[in-house]
Length: 208
Ligand SMILES: N[C@@H](CC(=O)c1ccccc1NC=O)C(=O)O
Ligand SMILES: [Zn+2]
Ligand SMILES: [Zn+2]
View 1 (tube, rainbow, N blue to C red):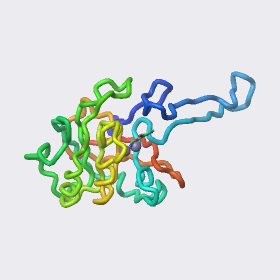
View 2 (view 1 turned 60 degrees about the horizontal axis):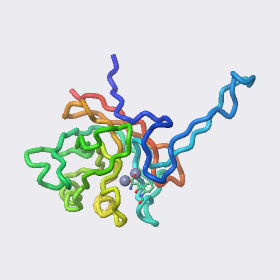
View 3 (view 1 turned 45 degrees about the vertical axis):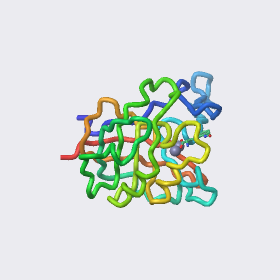
């Protein structure tokens, strides 16, 4: 059947991570093979590794943390569009795309070409796109890139612009070979009280 399709990065010790950040690791603290009655694991990873959401607290000291975010953002209908990503993704990339009534917009840029490595370069979301999308009702922007800003950005203008317009951010999706169209999306964060970000298991089910 497989109604739901996984659009998440696999988490293992080879999952690419932000340079200098904490990679993923897993170990058994208790092991049946070593005589314990149970296997009990421990995971360690950055909150911005793989497929994850950003809480506003990631880039704003007074911003909301993961536990404060509305769950409705992360479950419901979503439109997946393929866009031509040049240096920056602006209003022009959306010419001819009708997303009226769409609260969750997923962008397949195809610009993270080798998911086994952290990219050297990615396009950025043009901050002018934020009010344009917000005016049309978008509340969640998901994309197949590790960030909505350039990798070396310190000011994070796209993060701030999107958040300032009430648009939440979902990063690191795996959208290669997923057809554009209307889907149901589920990408729930963990219930992290202090979270600035959270890994999610992002899945899509074709609508209609
Ligand atoms: N903004 C990126 C993460 C990010 O910027 C970052 C993640 C881990 C370690 C350093 C980072 N930025 C450093 O300038 C993101 O939203 O995932
Ligand atoms: Zn992030
Ligand atoms: Zn981000």
